[in-house]
Length: 299
Length: 147
Image 1 (tube, chains in turn orange, cyan):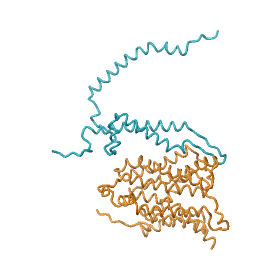
Image 2: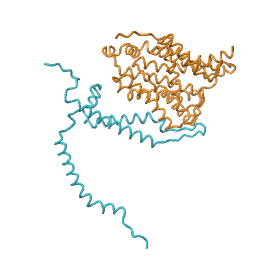
Image 3: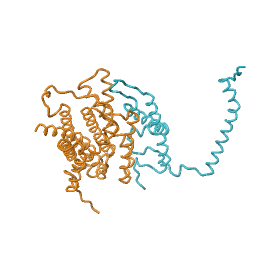
Image 4: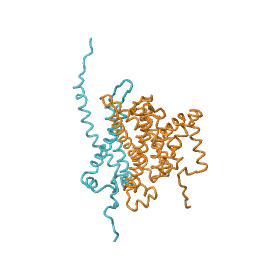
């Protein structure tokens, strides 16, 4: 039972990170029907920014939770800035182009950002300092670590805040209006460009939070971490039903648990086989994802 | 009589590359400044933004194991200069695209302009040729080879 619980919480941690990333994918898809393939690289840039900030600040003598807060804040600010700039440079000029053009642009930006970090930093793995200290009250607990507890709690809090933001604020309502019918929202005075920018900023900030937390938990990063995580999070978003926020969270958790249990009970070699096998299985029976709604299109 | 919205772009004014979607305060700034000055200011802003954006990744390199930080400030200058140049080039290309065919002068006019410039250049060129060798020699005087 203890082993099962360990795997359960391991899967929940992994799934939480996928959920944070998948929220960015699903929000952008909901607003502009674009798969932002560079989203994983924003997560990677967030992790690198946190590493740089944490290393520089720890040399100045800062440590503990203040270090995590400042490094996390730097990562969130820079990732949000990258997301905003990415949208302005790579996607906004292609707003009226065929749907394939921004998709290719997204893949191009993903490769560009990977190589940018590779050339400006290094291709080697860098050790990431453990920013989350062990809680004294969890010394005897073996089934879950302090960092895992923090990751799960932060994900739950971020998701709750995002839900409140989307449901009750003016810009959140504007986001829902644009997702429903962009032209009608524009005619009713919603500033669509601003809404799209805010969507990219929020999605990128969530990715940065995920990047900082998982890097601190795993203990090492390199320029390629965003690609793998991005693919998995995209899978989670599709699994849950792309365009649906609860679907993205559910998809992330299902994917995390599948990987964790497959690794624990079968073999770590088959981790991805089980994850993508489940995706295929669910999409065969429910093509719009677990919580996705199938929409009829008039022709 | 056709009704014209006050913010609507009029024909012949399309050479402005900044569009009419700017807020009133910034539109006023654009009107006050000459076009080149306004574009230069915007490009300067973009250069500063990219310098901020690339600062941690491009400038700082940390080694967590050796606990060292390497500051590479020269890269910040390259990023700023590159972003500024590309932004200016981008604005110029958009200006040309929006100006369309009116940007192109008739061939005869362009040829006469070309020859006028050539003539002016020649006038400047000869005195420079005359004076340039002594001027450069004043910096590098010829030395006699050692015997």
